[in-house]
Length: 270
Image (cartoon, rainbow, N blue to C red; front, side, top):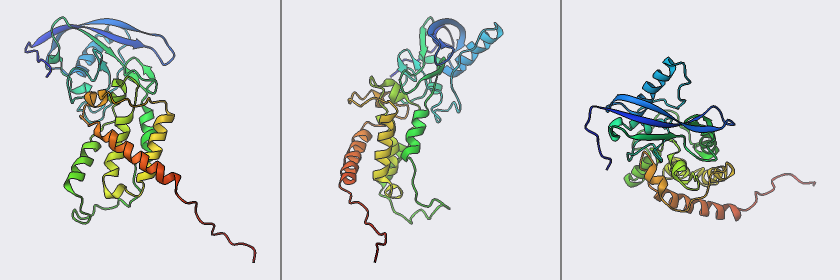
């Protein structure tokens, strides 16, 4: 459990990673942040700091954000060495200043991973996740109007497990937390939630092979079962999905290796 500060206002020092661009050198720069309401979210605090920097004519801190409700995963950054900050099961935007104390020095930096190159300051390029998703995160089953709820019965344990995997917001905390910058938890969640449902069976083998191979080609590291990924995940997705994906990958690889070549249906000379 993270200790909660009951004070109404605090002052902290931010030590923020500043980097003008992908090829520019970066460094930590300190900024005082005074008289902050402890009811502010971490992103609201950055907004206040940026307003002050703008009024001084200085370059504001670049950081990514969108929904600010823990849904999109855009706000990802590392706070005091932990992806998304000191809380458990929450994104950066759900981290509040009451998690810190008056006089604290808070170190803020981008997710560090070769496959997530820095764009500017705290913003990283996470298009690698998009490429993995595009490689196999879809179904070809007709998805027109919603069918009757009982038209295709799905066992509740399977439906619940698929929903657990589908909670992944693609933030990249699993990659940032892993010493190898592995994307296995992300890929396993995307493979798992479709592979558990009957609508996803047609592409099951193709999906897991394509997504894992794309992950490897993009430079993400290998998994060494440290479980830092699931500990840092804002949706608390279990590492059990990695084991499930490994089984699917092995089975799909074997079936692919021994799959007979298609018969020659072309007409020959009579």
